[in-house]
Image (cartoon, rainbow, N blue to C red):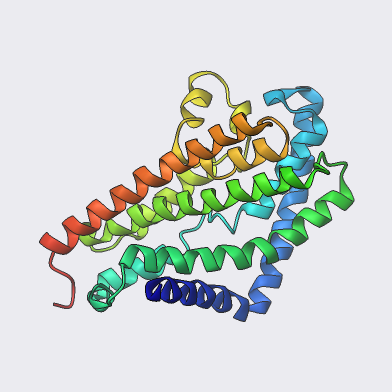
Length: 270
């Protein structure tokens, strides 16, 4: 119970930390909204040429665009978030202090990232989606159960996103500077999350591969649930199982790498 209170406090601290930067948040909301308009008009042109691409009609495609803008920051689809700080602490040796804390390092960072994601979902998520709904005919569901199922998928997506970035950040134990790995992960994530083009619309083998990679958990699964591509208890549970499976695998990989690093690697700074 005591540990739960600690992690809850860390999550609340993560929420407050990002809520402090109000000007940056306002600039981010504006950027997400403008980018949403650019991508929406690009999709309109594309769906005029290829109606039904990826199994979406035009309204569903536009909805996918604004869901992507609403979740982009909460799920850190193209930025590393906490991983930048973690890499810096590994590089300068401060991670040794973190490892001596009487809490689990992975759960500590996960709690902080959940707090960050909660703030960015309700700040940089709601406004762009609302503006998109006012400007375009979106296919948003009216059933609150679907929205609850969607939020469940978003929570699992945050955990998968965290687990991916945690594994990437741990590379700094061996490479000394994990910035390049994080940047590469951001580029790969932007493409394979489907932020630029729905994974359902990717052709052939590329689409088949993209839909089974962990990044498919981030945007495609929540979008499928909200757009009705996965409806009913069985389909939703299958989506949850896909996300939870990748979360378990990646969190376990992170724990193994962390254990190996702290046993065999000499930290910078002594």
